[in-house]
Image 1 (cartoon, rainbow, N blue to C red):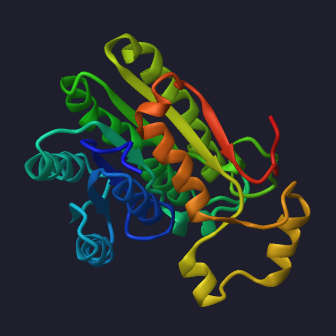
Image 2 (cartoon, one colour):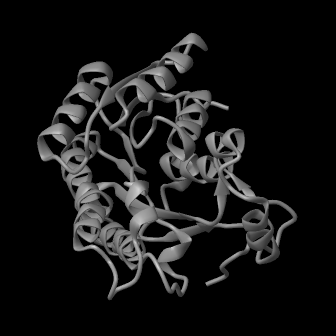
Length: 255
């Protein structure tokens, strides 16, 4: 497939998991990519793996909660690719999700860090890429949310609130710059087992069984399921899809 030929895409949060899978998918469809992650060694290893397959891919380290880091990463992307036609904003501080508790017990430092990355960081990324997407004449923004943004939960309110905020951000971008050729959408994954998690065995079988029982499909999700939807939204096939949230969850949530 070559539906992403001539596309220049930046992916924030691409050292592993969904971001790395999306990088592999969009490269296989003809795109060139710049990969950004706070894990500099990891993101460069992902980029090197793509280059070894003959793809145009570069990696750079950045903390998306820092505006200077984000702007520098976008400048590097432009230096490599000369333009931007798409941005996938996928980064999140998952360490904080493990420390999140409930409203009364939460450490406000956990709340602040969660918002700094998962919400403010995505605002910084979108602000940095939008002028260049507009300069290309058309462009696509895609954000990664989570099923927790729409599901009731007794714990992790900081994470859920941060992910829900991306719905509003995408709708704002879609409405404000839609007539100028910009689309903005959200992918909301359900329970996904990443290759790293599968290899480490960090997810207990009882958790997998729990989520599988709530699924309408016979298997748990994998990163390639989400990557396929993101690739669609970044392609010309997704040009009339904007301001929407797409639930890639095996039927775990049917809004």
